[in-house]
Amino acid sequence: LKEAIIFRDFFVCVSALDTNNVTVKKQVFELLSALCVYSQEGYHRCLETLQHYKEQKNERYRFKLIVEELKNAKNVEYQTALLAFVNCVIISAPSTKKRIRIRNEFIGLKLLEAISQLRRECSESGAESDLMVQLDVFDEQRYTDEGQLTGPDGVDLNSHLDVFYAILRQVKKKTKNKGKKYFQILV
Image (cartoon, rainbow, N blue to C red; front, side, top):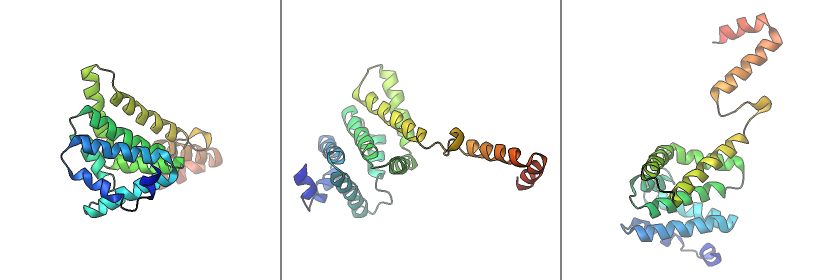
């Protein structure tokens, strides 16, 4: 892995993703996953590689390929490798804020829809699989990270309603009847 990080033409490896051979693509994503968890330098190299691929293909988003492959893949082992890669990219980010930002990039590309579909397919098959483990890891890490973002008084800063009601409570406390009038004017 150390050689992969140092290898200047590592971007060539990602060009293998242009094949229809699922085994080759699976191995590329497994290698990228290993780079992510190996070191921060490997993690940055992986993100650079995805950025290079995005630019080479004139794509708008660096994670689009992964989400599209996950949506269209029929091979469960390949789906598992893709979702494991998604989890590695997110979990290996150095801070909660960066993990959430990267996860939101994936979510913006409709990853949650793909995950819901995969979860339904796993439930229908009834088999306990490595794919189900990766689905659970994604959800658990998401809830853990979001739990760390709660603000004062347990307000979930990602929830518009929680923030709205927290502001409403503060206005009510401070100004009683005046606050209600001002708040009604604002609304």
